[in-house]
Length: 329
Ligand code: DGY
Image (cartoon, rainbow, N blue to C red):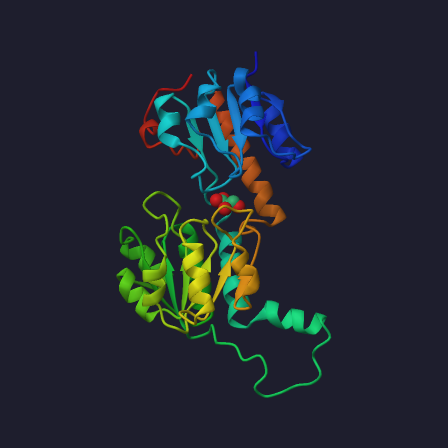
């Protein structure tokens, strides 16, 4: 008998077709998100789960899923999943690294350019019919080219952001939990600095660290105060790495110049304070959202799940203790 898998959100048909070769698939192409209770009910007799960052896979859900063997997240970040609880239950967890690096870097860059050149402000100005003529000092922005970019989190996405920055003749400095290998620094043309040096020197700061209890509110009032008053902050990684209330206060009081945001604490709700501000460009968590990339993410998750349920170590296993393990049935 094929293992039963639950897909929690709408995905591309090719991912479902692929999974159907290996599994009995219950999809949700209507894309009405399941409540935790509804998902728990569906998992009562399922072996696999393909989920999104909108699904919380915690101990309570796992308790309702006695047969669960694998969870494939359709995202590179997996802070929605309690990995230690899964590991304790012998459940493999996978993510989708690699396939979204370039698209996510593009979006971070788009937010940086849009914020520097005030694209959303000027677009509203035109749409509102307010443009009556050219002026030398109209809508002055700041240059991205030749500016100093500080990247916090020099993983794969941080590295491809650095590659883009080279095309803009930017000076790239970075901070990472651990300094990256010399070859990576050389390829990224990036110089390792302390966090305080980064805050003091960067004209633009792009956040790329993953969200975890350790990075919760890593950027708060104290850190914002250390940035240049002309600095622009970009967060396209995860809500929660920034203290949104502190950011709103900093943006309202000239502590930093502007921010470009794709993610928020408690999204999809966001602090109404952001909506009052002109110096913030807001996007609805679309970092990886191009058709090619989202399709690749869904297919990567499907392949991970099929492998995990076929007794093969899935390509993108994230439980650290499973890596060399034979704990696969
Ligand atoms: C990810 O993969 O973590 C992205 O945020 C999903 O869009």
